Structures are given as C-alpha cells and as structure tokens.
Length: 295
Image 1 (cartoon, rainbow, N blue to C red):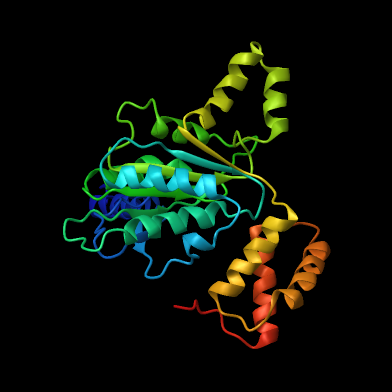
Image 2 (tube, rainbow, N blue to C red):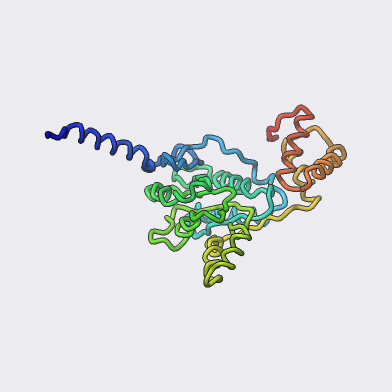
C-alpha cells in the first residue's frame, strides 16, 4: 500500500505552525526613544509606550519627606551612572508608594533640560502576574543603552506561587545577573512580600524550618533600599488636603473644608494620602472646579 507522503508532510507542517502560535511570543527589539514610560506586555514580548503617565507632582506628596528624599537620591545616582540600589516601598495602604515612584521618575528627568545625550531614565511597568517573564524582559533591555527603572506595583506572592524565584535570580545571584542599565522598584503592603501564614506554614512543615523560611524572607533582603510607609496622623492628613487645595487653586477657605475633611475620614475609617485625594475630588466636584494645577 502506498503512503500518501504529501498529506503526511502537510499535516506535520500544520502541527508545527499551531505549536509555534501557542508558544510564548519572542521579545521584539525595543525602541526606547519614543517615550519615557512603557508597559511590558509579556504575551507578545512587547514594550508599549505610555504617552502620559498618571501621576501627581512630587511636591504634593505630604508626610513622606524622608522616603521622597531617599528615593530621589537613589534614582538620581542611577540616572548619572553611579551605584544605586533596588528599592522596596512597603507599608500602609494609600500612603503614596506607587505615586512616589512615578513622581520621582518625572522629577529626576525634569532636572535635565537638554536630553541630547539620552540621560533621561525610562520607567517600565511590569505587572506582578508577569514576574516570571522578567528574564525575557531583561534580554530585551540588555540590548539597549538607556537606563531603565522596572516598576512592579503591589508586588506579593501567595502560598502556591514560585515566580518569586525568578525575581530572586534577577535581583541578585543569577549567572547573568541584572544589567547595569536596569534598576528594580517594587511596592507592597508586606515587608517580606509573603503572607505571614505562608512563612509560618513553611516553618512548621519544613525538615529544617529555618532554612526554608530564610529562603523566602531573603527575597526582600535583596532590595538594598527599604522605604517604610506608615498610616498618617490627623495633622498630616489635613496638610495633604491643604496642599492640594492650594495647588489646584480651589476657592474655599480652611475653616470650611477642614471639618468636612475630618468627617470624610471618619466615614472611610482611615486617614491616608488616597483618602485625602478622594476627598479633594469630591470637594472640587461640589465646587464645580476642574483639577488643573495652578501655574
């Protein structure tokens, strides 16, 4: 019986094409000159430029002066080709961790009036679900000369995830290591990036408990710069709102908005930069004002 070889070869070709479509996309060469901010799309291996970053001016971030100064200095040194640390911004919700990263990036770049030498830093956001693809992203960035801050907002790992191992290798310890033109900034509500019950479970079930716990806790140790954010007091909360009211030129005096702002925080059950901004949006809406900064 003769074998229908053309049909067999055609079938194998179609199978190969299908497998290629299902495989992870190859990282495309990145043109980092088209913008100052990008988002990493892991499925396609593409860096999508961001025309306008959603951010507030760094001077409007109240109650975090120490953290602002340290992160600005670290980013400025990195921009200038000097040694700098990966940074972990951890702590209370709504206290401006991610806002600070974006604001500092803009402020450090704004210090350079003429960027003909290409010194401005690119901010690249990677979603926490895509942390396992960090090695692919670094392969893209190794081929560029531009300095890049990788930014992962709300980074944390659950009890079943193993992508933290990819991050550990990237931050320190891998054969290739982190490229000299890349820095990693992350925000998290957890100091050690792992839930407490995860660490306790590892301690109770491990043969040598200390070694397993140490492996997980050592992830946060690989960030050279730790910046803690804590819940603010009433005066700091009011200072935040006062700064916003002044910056946006809202036609209202403090005697009017102050008791209203305090009541707003009571109904929310917390005081933070996020609550202050949400109150300001409500106040501006009631006043019929648009939130455009006053020059």
